[in-house]
Image (cartoon, rainbow, N blue to C red; front, side, top):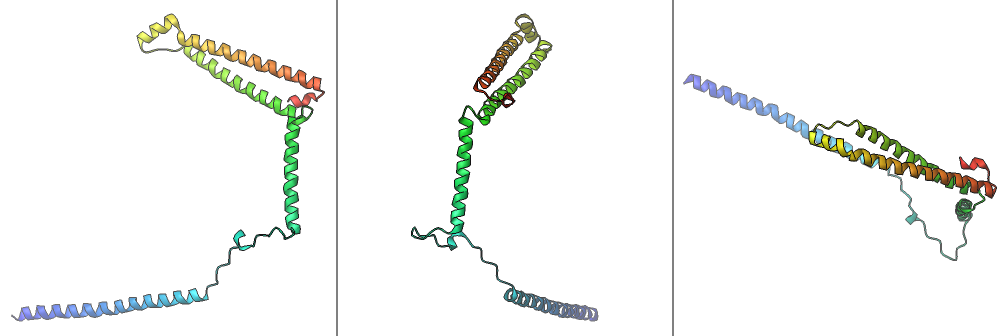
Length: 190
């Protein structure tokens, strides 16, 4: 029985020691949290206030009877000058005697011609591929050997694209003639 009492005493001592050990740690952590909260409140009190953001709503709108200020006059003159400049550019693009008019027309035709030449190149590559195409399906290979529809379609597309390119080149030549007749500089065609 003595052994049982000794074990009980040891267990009681261990529980008492553990409770004494944990209690100061909890008090200390509570003190740390309270101190951190106090420091945070102090920092918030001492922190500078954020700067006010000024928006258009903060300014009163000018009444119709208020004369415009020098800044308003400058802004309106800048806007008027920009509008005049853009309208002058539009007028120059529509005037058959201006460089901008001719350059714009030539640029459109050059872009169309370049696009058509790229498409022709692609069509020719596809036709070359179709002429040496190997079909693993014997039925399809036999059909293509006799009618060659894919090659014929490709050839027809290429012929149509060549006609389109010739037409665009003729339009370009006609436009150069028009430029010459209008008395424009031949450099505008480039």
